[in-house]
Image 1 (cartoon, helix red, strand yellow):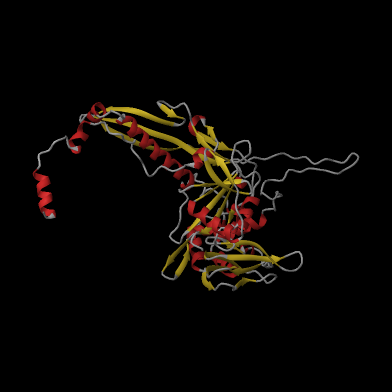
Image 2 (cartoon, rainbow, N blue to C red; image 1 turned 180 degrees about the vertical axis):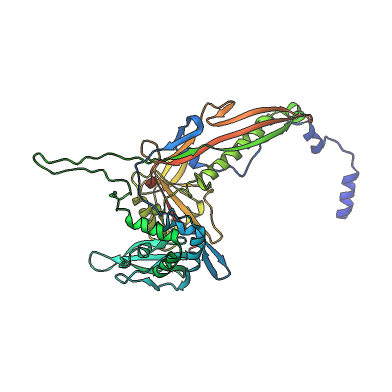
Length: 467
């Protein structure tokens, strides 16, 4: 008998038992709760100390600081031509507070584009400084003289940075360091003579520059805060200095941000399909998970209070060779006391691991909640997939000190809100409409505050594609 004849014979036999397809209709299957790929570890939400905020606003009082001009400059690129956004020239200390957009546009037009190849010198130590450099793209090293006359790298600058701003106001200025291109660089330069020519025709700029020259130099500490006069080491009845601690007149206030959605569930589903799992509870559970994912994303990326956007310029570092090396991580740690944690994209952690492997280093790990977390110098490196990775495969690594008592980074929330299921997170029943659909308002209130600038540091433009 052929194979086809055997199959036909089997099909013609009468069925002697219940089929599996029919049996499944009567059986209680073993099933999982609804799964969701978006759920991540959310280490930032777990590790950030949360401060309860009454009235929805948190005010950060600081000592009076005179430091200005610590922002980044933004550019517009059209084909191979790069132009500075005129308003962004206000980031330069000389033009901070100057708001005449017409004059700023004239200054932007006088900026000259220049290209430098890797290894070329942009400025030399000791030579006259007569122009400011605006770095549109690339990396530049600041090189000084070491204690034994050798070259020492003072720092690395990248996209959006500027240097030589002191040359715009001081005709006798000289370069106090050498700058050399690490990669191919595109820069815009604004010579002092062009600034002076614009000032001759613009009374507003001329008045602004005269006012700056007339302001006496403020006595400040290395952080830009008003100096507290003290006397030490004296003997006898020396006359002691009088002093006071001045505060910022307009301290920054952080208002709680909100993330909300309206969850809709048909009453027929809620009434009839609640075994073995409650449909309403599962819908709310997954919605709350998505809301928490968005909350962590906002704490990292929000333009008003996000960590990446609220790091001060002097706390932003550039990797010396692109990839995140142990040296770069040490430099990031050295900028603050009591660092509590790193936050990095998982691919950045992998890139750091590769650099450690090249040097034969094995970072220690620590057990946190059953998870083995890598550390560097005893500081845990938590994965966070909310830190963006650019198309050029670069990302950032965040390092911070946390806690209100430590003048660090804190999370802000307000507990005790109506229909609260977790601190600062509520689920409020909104009623049933004419289509028999129930609605629930799911709300989370949150924000983050950096109490002092050195509590937060960022290693920027970290390359994760280097092997």
